[in-house]
Length: 64
Image (cartoon, rainbow, N blue to C red; front, side, top):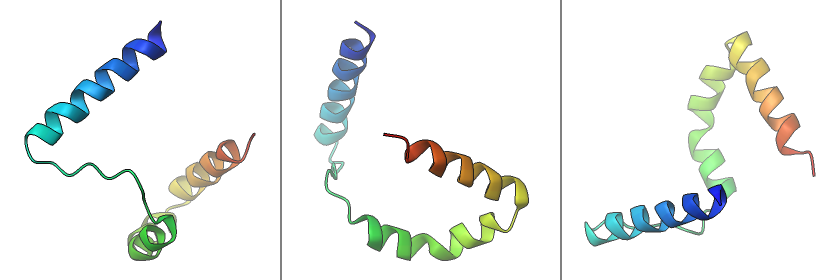
């Protein structure tokens, strides 16, 4: 039930955004994005707390 409600709201929000002229991007070149944001990412990873948080997120993301 929750998942269905969330999907309905997401689709409605996308439709609203699109009707206002927002371009909805569904295919992302992850490598290009990572390359483009690397300087900002490196800046924040210099903070030990952020570095630890990123490591935790990556560990969770790699769990099947």
